[in-house]
Length: 332
Picture (cartoon, rainbow, N blue to C red):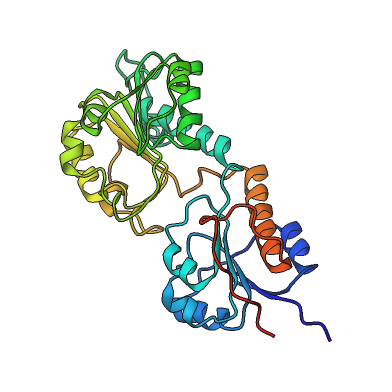
């Protein structure tokens, strides 16, 4: 009897991707689409060769030690701060993510948040739905322009560059950015981009968007001190990861109108949201849906499946987070 590799699908995914995986593997699928408690995740992974995960599943040395046959954890996300990547590498377990396929969709949403935040769309909709709109006035829900303004981007990877193109070519914005490494000069020239230090970025941006990876180094990259440098007319958008912004400090800055508004798709401790943010009118809040177009979510699931099939069939992953490891041999 030939034993097929055993794979845990930790959350609900598109049916066609499940059917494809079932052609290759013995599947165990999360029946409730709720994140497994940690002890349950460890128990279910104990005899698995692979796992399709989302940002909800923390994979670290403890989990890996309890799953000796595990050869790949495939995140259905571009972010991977739920993985202890060094621990995966040391254990010979491939860690993969889904870059590229969500770049343009996420950039669309990031720019939508810039517009909604600057033009007070959520705030004005709530006003209308509550029945308060009974007259017109020249300054009703006025906000800053987006076209022609200065767009600041913190984190100039694939998604940051896609947002930059929308701002510069679509809205005639001036572009400043901060990144771990500077873009090639020809890319800067094409965008009219200016590479600046972080303090300059904070001081000059009319609309600041965060698109950097989460790590211990980027934790609370935007806190009270950074918010104090921003213009009182500026907006802040975070589509990166919760924890990059100190949400409590942001709530204070918004309440005291030290910045004009914020748009947030990610939060510290999500799905919980800081209660002070929920009480504020000048913040647009969305439930981590920047990549949520039908086509993109299908492409993300398919790429995660490609990585699982590649590793467990012996050809290797398409999009490894670390390019070269010594994978474990599949147990007999």
